[in-house]
Image (cartoon, rainbow over all chains, first blue to last red; front, side, top):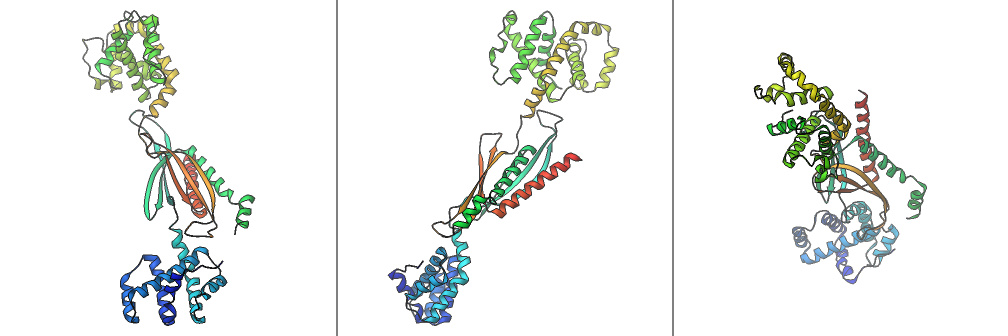
Length: 199
Length: 232
């Protein structure tokens, strides 16, 4: 699958051959940092001064590079496809190799960052448990009522929240049985066939 | 068992054969148990033809007294002998206005046994009249003891209680931000019951296979330690 690059995108990337490879590598680093932490206009300004071009040009260059990397990572295109897509830009052999290397080195991390953008539910983080026995209450003395107290740690969009819950021994065994069945499902033929065939 | 004067008076009236004959006594007692234990019992529980000849105010007072007595006995898990003894004390010891014994004395059982034997023989004679009623009360109480204890045990506040779990296994293919994901994920939902209004009826979370294995491992540890505790 080839990447379709718009005209504007090609224009922005046209800045790259005008600088030497060390600078392109630096731009690559800035691009990944941009994905990790967001834009930093000061860096654009200092780079623009050093290279003697407007900061807009630098910004467009970095953004173009960022978009190239994210689209490639998102679609998980092969090396060959990447090379063919970039070939359209008419860059030198050396620059193409540099861009490919940049893509391959950062692909995994970019995919992790992109996966955080997906709609998500609270996800499991940790579980703590404690065994308790209720001996008496205001309305009834001399009881023996076992219970398991559970603290469930969940993560949602970076916030960590905890829920304290309780259950009785019978329900605990039921929970364990049900969730073990859930794990077993992944090993059935049906699931294995699906995993094998959807690639 | 600490009971107010009003309750004790009501109970004494109940024991008096002049106010309540045998049949009425039994009916009122059964009505008291029914209104406590039967979830659908309504106010008509006292509307029995055999109770019509009794003043409704007295009827209500005695019904309330009997119900309070039953609850107190249930709360303290009174057994048959304790019950017999305490009913006897409440009916007889307090009906004689010459004796001034405070409620705190009731708690010192050994001293009271002593008092009981030293007191006049009229008490022992009197008790013959009401032995039948005491036995009746104890029998009714025994019959309803389990339901009563279950009812009392279910009252009270506790943490949100997990009642069930449901899960969903999915295979993630792509999102609009990320194509070619190809990984399995689980969505687990815990059904939770709250003693107050249903504040969080359900807790849902997603997890990967490894995370679910971790969760199941921890729950299995908990159930193993539960088993070990029961064997100690």
